[in-house]
Length: 483
Picture 1 (cartoon, rainbow, N blue to C red):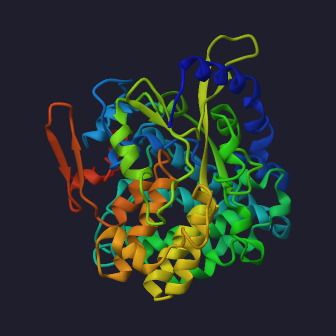
Picture 2 (cartoon, helix red, strand yellow):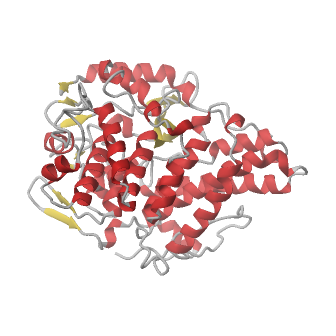
Picture 3 (cartoon, one colour):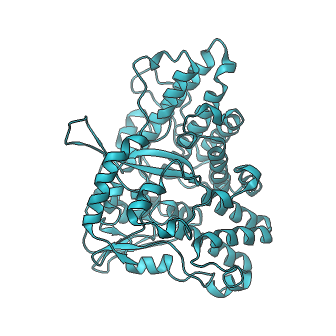
């Protein structure tokens, strides 16, 4: 663990400002609305991904955050920590994310309409595939955040979110929320129809689009949430050529271990990193304040997440800190985009990995656990450990059922291995928002304290775990979530 000065952060900011342009695709030109060529449809699909960051409110709601007593105060960080509806509509807020998702869906629907109306539809199959999978993804994230988490026993009655499949042609169109089950059915339909059509050769930079690997990775998450474990394994095994997960993982205990924070920030979310299956640019302050938010990781959380682990070895993740309370792993940083060439103002952006190799590994391991394929679970856990433990030794650091049972204090082998998966996953995706998904999936109770010892407890059935719909959604005839 190392102290890190603000001077270094400022230096990195200058570096980021000079290099941000390579991450940002150009907007479609003035002729894109005609959508009369596959290339123009592809250009439109560059906007078919939610260009908003969910990490700020996800981390704040999770058990990765505590009240540090001081720090950067932002409603997008403070309100979720106390499970209050977020009193903010700008970047990093749930309402910003909601709007970005439906903007992405609108792009998908216009692209699909163009594909449908084309004289030769066979020339548009790759674009159709990307649009269908991207539409499925945006709706999937919306229903994950703004509806009760998928439960097969209640999904047919739990209110969903509007699944929009047509371009809007009227002002203030009325929508129906439907049910979570209905939304999941439509997501699955779009996903399965789109995946076979995707063609990686149509992309200049496949990692900025739903390439085949990213689409399969999305399928593993979708079916894991739905608890269709056989399909999780099926799609995980299709994700990489020759099922070579090892060759696509982040080299944390080799290449990354020698990098400075500046180098890690420059590397982590690059399209050249094979582990990043899908990246999206998001207008966000997260890269600026990830360590300084008042409600975030401190030393006690760092020890809980990155301290001892089932292997008996040490994680290789580097921890840095400002002062005595602001802790961070150098992952996601800010890229400042000027309003014009000579401007002194502009907007902050953060590149976010939406799907990575490591998530596919964890999803497959968890699915195999429920399918009873214990040897496959252990194989994936040991593969992960081999890339994350300092000076990894297969004999000394091997993950076994016995070691997992001892570490987690349980005689139940499945619970021991599940805790190992979730523990590894929490460490891997620290400060990236994924922990909130696992908290929702398993109904984990969250206890948040303020510096005075006051406690907010949110149990599995607490309505506050479901983000509130924007008030503007009432104009579309949508009932807000109960409070």
